[in-house]
Amino acid sequence: MNPFTIAKDIKNIEKILKPALEKYIQGAGFAKSDEINEILKKISELEKRIDKIEEKL
Image 1 (cartoon, rainbow, N blue to C red):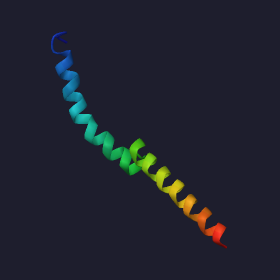
Image 2 (cartoon, rainbow, N blue to C red):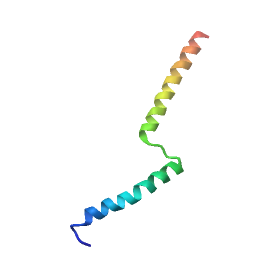
Image 3 (cartoon, rainbow, N blue to C red):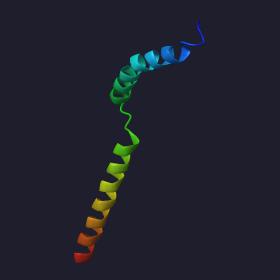
Image 4 (tube, rainbow, N blue to C red):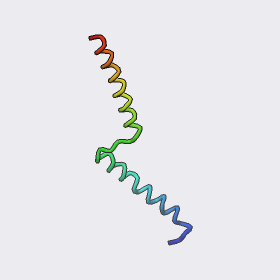
């Protein structure tokens, strides 16, 4: 291994593995943190709506 080409080799490996890893993560049911935050925000909004409806009853 040439120490001057290690960084280049690592970038090439990353280019190869990244799509496969993303495909595995999606297939395994993992979610990205921004998706989770969006879902949690929607849940809190729905809880607020439910509270308002319950107050009217």
